[in-house]
Amino acid sequence: MNTEAFNKNLNTNTVATRYWHAIDKGKVQCDLCPRFCKLKEGQRGLCFIRANQAGKIVLTSYGRSSGFCVDPIEKKPLNHFLPGTSVFSFGTAGCNLSCKFCQNWDISKSRENDTLADNASPLEIANTAHELGCRSVAFTYNDPVIFHEYAIDVAKACHQQNIKTVAVTAGYICPEPRKEFFQHMDAANVDLKAFTDDFYQHMTGSHLQPVLDTLIYLKQHTNVWVELTTLLIPGKNDSKEEIDAMTKWVVKNLGADVPMHFTAYHPAFKILDIPSTPGETLTQARDIAQKNGVRYAYTGNVHDKKGESTYCHHCSQILIGRNWYELSEWNLSDEGKCINCGSVCSGIFESSPGTWGAKRQPVRMSNKS
Image 1 (spheres, rainbow, N blue to C red):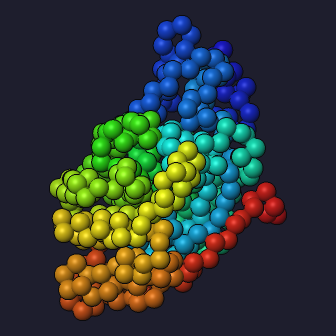
Image 2: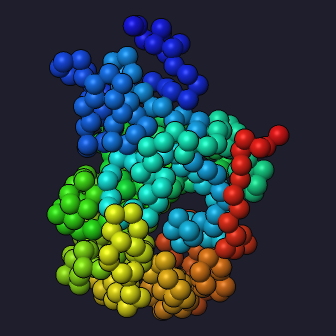
Image 3: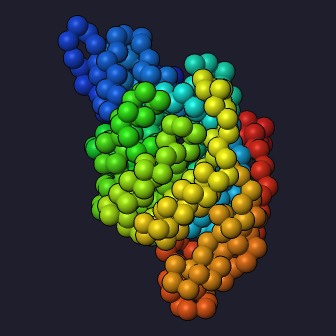
């Protein structure tokens, strides 16, 4: 089947992709992420939504979503990117990692098309975000790199309406598609799941180095605002030694201004016998990060106003007070500087914070007139 005939044969939710090549015995290899799935005709990759159809890799979830919702930007979590504003969030189904501890497993591990219960074109998403007053759109709930083509088209439509874009991702993507993907993103929260390859292999079915490569690429070759999140699992990735090594690497390779979020694990998916992360573990990680030079270290998934708030790295003035997702104090000047000492707080700030608060507003696109 030639390319023109192939494209005509696709349904509205299935689109051709570019990052693949043919291999022996009629198989094709997906080159989107370092998993390099080798697929026979009709087979789906581990991610579920990329498949071999007529000897080509296609995306089968274009325009389909597991749900849309207006969230506080701090929930992504992003603390230095348009604080207090609302973000229009959505994801699809599937994931290219196999995290045994996945906190969104009902979406990311779904193998059911019924999970993709809502539909929206890129223009509809941009228009809805604009109508709802959202300053940004987030690709989240599952990893957006696997719906690469859809995310990029949504980002293009959003930018035409001056709406910024956010990727919430594990950063497990190959260099060429990575370059294209992040050309269209304004901010990213990258999930740095641990700092040992053993953890990545046995707990996520992937490897650490490609994630580190993505982080270095983002800092050295893009203008994407980057924040990091590490879900600390008791006895798995929460040792003082590992947090020490991780935070030193971040400061050396990414810089002191990259915010780090240490968040609490709660039993989920395939790991139900490990208790939730104690608050002391999160505070300890935050302290180690600050000792090693991380200027903005946070705790998450627990109520900890001190650990949620932003402080001046020079004079320790509270700059942005947070209580869960509600903002309280705001001590930044119009230029994003500490009003006490004038030191710059790194981030993407507007002259005043947003007022969205902690609200979560589900949106059903198929019900919109």
